[in-house]
Image (cartoon, rainbow, N blue to C red):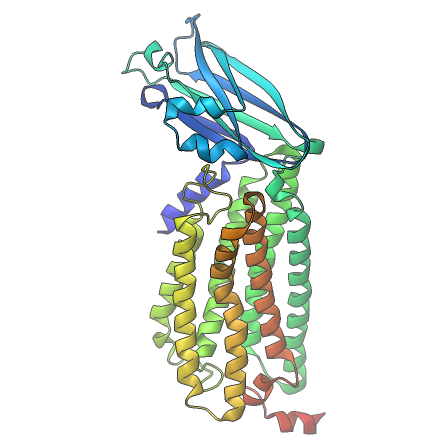
Amino acid sequence: MIKYLFVLILLYLTQAKRIKQSYLIKSLKDWHYISKFGAETGEVFYSLTFRIINADENDERTIPIQYELFLDEEWQNAIEKSECDRNNVARRKETIWIPVKSEFEFKGSLTAKVRAHLWYFAFSDCEKQLRNSFPVENKVKLEVELHITNVGGTEFTLEQFGILQIIGVIALIDVIMLIYNGNQILEKQRKYEEFSLPLFLLVITLLLETFSYSFLTIHLWIYSENGAGSLLLQVMSVIFQVASQFSLTMILVMLSWGWQINFSKFDNFELFLPISILIGFFQITIVGVSFIDYDSYYKDHSYEGWVGWLAALIYIGEFIYFMNGLVDTYNKQNTKIQQFILLLGLYGGVYFISFPVLQTVNLFTARYVRYKVMEIGTMLFRTSAILLLTRLFTSKKSIFAQISIENKSFLDRNKDE
């Protein structure tokens, strides 16, 4: 599963708005989708380069292929037609003659005056002139490269506008919480000679998330300059994201089943080992499925379509298990501890339910804002859950400070002070 995830990550990371795709000519269909781009109002520039690979270097022929460009308003109508009838609703189509021994670069621009639009790029070989130009046994390939710059020269698509600044702010919030929680650990150790394991695990979660968002912020900044970003930074961001989600999920699940209430040590951790392995598998699955069919014409964000609903079902399943633990613990405790369990259910619910809620909200939003709703929404809800847990673990007046069996009693603390 991990090997499969890594392959999907690499496939995803090679996709930017500098798109390069390669097709074995003998396996070409009549029509192929290349990519889409969210263009702001104004003028957007693009270049489309076609080159033939592995052909005879002495071949002097030029071979035709048709480039097609579709507007979002007609796109649904286009894909419902047969492949060779789709050009009838294309906003722009042009026959391009590709030299076999070199390449052809087509440059163009798009202008939107009223509102922003999504544009879809495709090419077709309905007359089979390209496929019939080479013997079937040949391994000749067609390479297509697309580079698009938005209004103002930025490499970001419309969906990504402002996301760099938002992620930067979230990363800064995480850094502040990380410093605050780290200081709380040191203060408890100095003042009460205590080591708060829940707070320590929350700091680990924050550290992982901070690394993930920091790597992502730097990658997006590089992307804004060259349209490709950094492969290494993207890989590291995804790895730390998976680890952070796993850590946060485990904290919530263990608390729901009575950790720090009925027990504090991990003498019976073997009880949590199966569920921890299962949760780890689910977190890898959630991230992994987001890379399936990335940049397909029907996907406006990583979790569009069935992969998003699969991930939503996983989150709902984790939420049900979390709530089952809360109910079991709630029924065995006094009123004070029951108040803590209700708060934990509220805070944990923010994290588990946020994804299915955002997935549902996106059914009713414009296509070019769905990416922001999902990406920024999940980040904000996850950060909010960590912020609420921070308050729960660190506030001297919180119920957790009174009921946690690792701590001194709340009354003893007040006497010390």
